Image 1 (spheres, rainbow, N blue to C red):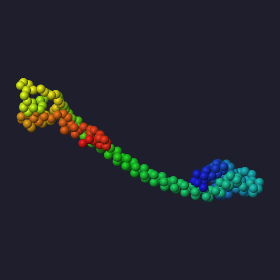
Image 2 (cartoon, one colour; image 1 turned 135 degrees about the horizontal axis):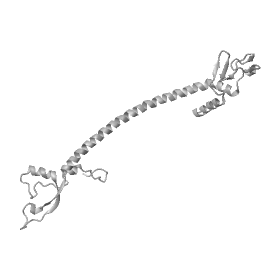
Image 3 (tube, rainbow, N blue to C red; image 1 turned 45 degrees about the vertical axis):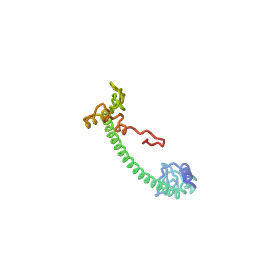
Image 4 (cartoon, one colour; image 1 turned 90 degrees about the horizontal axis):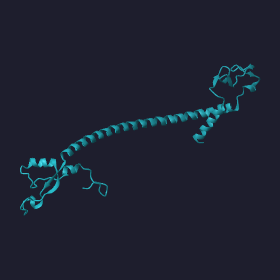
Length: 209
């Protein structure tokens, strides 16, 4: 018999028996439920427990439902105790597991907050770098004109390009002869800006090299 069926039978016996709570009157050999007797104590005359008239020994008998409940109690109660012990053990195990899960969750929350702090710190550094390496549009000479080997008699033609402001400052500081000839010229986006940009997904899902 399954536990579900067994519990259903026990519940049916409980529902059919006289309402409780029951009390044992050991002095008079009776079992009472409130002012009434489930089992009468037998004395000639009145029941000493509930006061009802007792005509003969048959009056001491209990109802079939109450008798069924009492008879099965000897096996029902140990069975229910085993069920309680099993559920209690499972609950204790679940509580231990829940405690471990909560501790792990709390640790991951700490990790997540630390990672978020690090992300913000790095984002601020990236912002500062990007503020330094900003573009500006300039007109430059290229090719033979830049190397001064062209055959232009007057002003050479120019090309409009974007130049990295910070890299240009570094080039000017490093090269005292920096001029429009094109020496130490850095286009924008420069290598620094390109390194900060999100990689473009390649065919395999990774970044392009």
